[in-house]
Length: 207
Image (cartoon, rainbow, N blue to C red; front, side):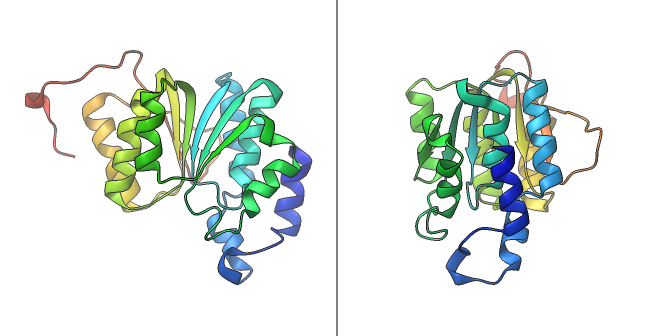
């Protein structure tokens, strides 16, 4: 997986979204340094199961696969993998042999996550890099707090206002805490509380 990720970083993907310009890969994908930090965090957490929202070109997915190894399980949710990316991210995963441990879910996360929750899926960690709209990120986090085990980790890409505003509700009202990083990166890593509890509506704190 590390070799596949190096090739992707160095050579770029064989095709670009919508036949776009070369800069799209850099703009969309998690940078190599950040992929290293994501991998290292998952290794430190001894994560064996991960849900990822947003496959795109596959850079972060390869880092997750590197952390999980052959005995891990990875669910990658991306409704646009075929229509927008012509399956280039999934091809990178299969070329690295990760189709054996990865399930590609070709649905909106707002549809896939409640179904996976209903099916009993529980994971150690999640990586969120799908929609950057406030309401959609908020819904992703709502379901992930029930899918990711208590004490588990959620990592969010992109420090943009809608994403950070959605996250702020959960930090302010549900006791989520940021995991400090030894090296600067554009992601935010969050640890969930040790118990899944529902606060009283009277305890709401504006965020």
